[in-house]
Image 1 (cartoon, rainbow, N blue to C red):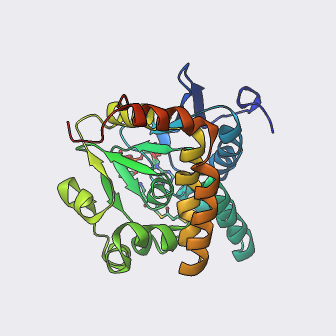
Image 2 (cartoon, helix red, strand yellow; image 1 turned 60 degrees about the vertical axis):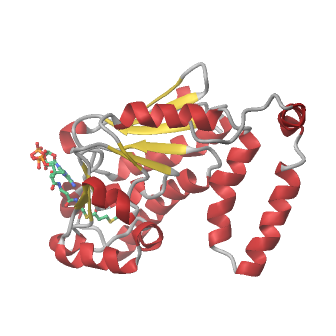
Image 3 (cartoon, helix red, strand yellow; image 1 turned 180 degrees about the vertical axis):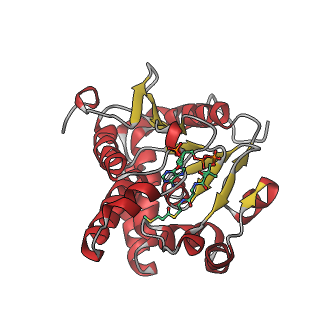
Amino acid sequence: MPDIADLRLEHLLCDIDAEGIATVTLNRPAKRNALNAATIEELVALFSALPVSGARAVVLRAEGPHFCAGLDLVEHGQSERSPAEFMRICLRWHEAFNKIEYGGIPVIAALRGAVVGGGLELASSVHIRVMDETTYFGLPEGQRGLFTGGGATIRVPQLIGKARMIDMMLTGRLYSGDEAVAVGMAQYRVPDSEAKAYELARACARNTPLSNFAICSGISHMQNMSGLDAAYAEATLAGIVNTQDAAKGRLESFAKGTAVKIKPD
Ligand code: 1HE
């Protein structure tokens, strides 16, 4: 597994601070962070390396006023791809976004501006979405003569339901503001999505890495199983996580009455 410092990143930036909070930046602002094939390969490489890098949480942010304008329409239009070639490209998108969703470390997206098409596919693969006042969500595939290829048909209905997704794709409907939170596009809407994303990342990083691994990998896997199998997998995972040495001190401090109480502020 290459070290993150050895990855030759052209369209992404990555930095890990002393607390283990990694910042991943989409860094094609002049192209509104449109996802070309090279960026997808960088996402695959980076999110393969991050879970074994010691990072405890990731903030996924973007340069410029827009989080991500989706598929690089210019590259796609000029590439004359065959159906088989584009199917392979889509499988690389799945690889990248599965690394994010199933990688076992919390990934928090700090959203702003356009989160559209493949940009929404990317955002829907992270664990927590934070939007600001400028953020809007769209699936303009119908208007472009295209179809989703980066996992939206699986992840977007899990967030907002099938009927809303189909409406967005057919009519170009956009979601923003309170409505976007109410339908489930984002969990937080704040003036500064990056500041909130870092606050949440630091909260996640205080958990044990094994708990975070179970939360950020196990829940998604269990959604793919039958109820009976998911219950068995849950019990197996809880057997491992809930008996970990790293939890012992936390349980002892609860028994002594010195642990934090779970109450609203
Ligand atoms: C791009 C892209 C792109 C911008 N591919 N180059 N996604 C879309 O349908 C959204 C397409 N983008 C837009 O609607 C607008 O660009 C935005 C609303 C996001 C931003 O508008 P604005 O006025 O700030 O920027 P702009 O002037 O439109 O674009 C600035 C540059 O970014 C310009 O390049 P330039 O060289 O002429 O300066 C644009 O061409 C470029 N740019 N968006 C390529 N998407 C796996 S299947 C997934 C299918 C989809 O994702 S469909 C949804 C595609």
